[in-house]
Image 1 (cartoon, rainbow, N blue to C red):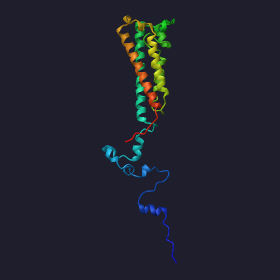
Image 2 (tube, rainbow, N blue to C red):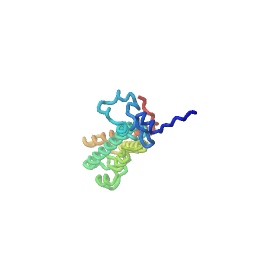
Image 3 (spheres, one colour):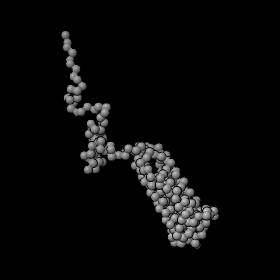
Image 4 (cartoon, helix red, strand yellow):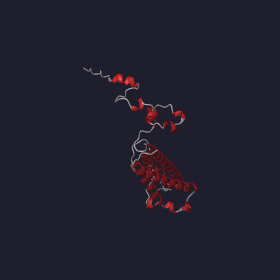
Length: 216
């Protein structure tokens, strides 16, 4: 008559195998060393990062979806372009107030002085209305967001509107009347608008592009 061998418990078998158990609540990266998961990690890790635990390395990478490093770069470029556009608008408004250059799109004027027109949001002959740069900065400011094409679209439309508004101002067609400061303000205004358009379109294209994981 044969006797059945006693079955060893799961805990005894794990002790004999000499590694800790992996529970559903415990990440695998906290149990196994990094070189068990990625044997070639030591080859490319810098010396100061080789003692970092897998959990710390996982937390160091951005948690955003879809190529977050590229998105962060485009966010910063969009924010920088919007801030440059705001600075150009501020300079143009100051020069317009000094040189008394009212906003007259298509020759249409309003019964307001240049400072009042600037403060009221009408703009000036060489400066965009202040709601435009405010809207651009507000659209570009949230740098940590899920991929969204809307901020880039808003900034590109604002940049196009500013260039169109510059072309329809009568003072733009009278370059001989420009002071050196007005010439500088117009040039910066057009350049900042073009940069805002480029950054907006690039951000929009990046947000719409499907993400593909990089291959090492």
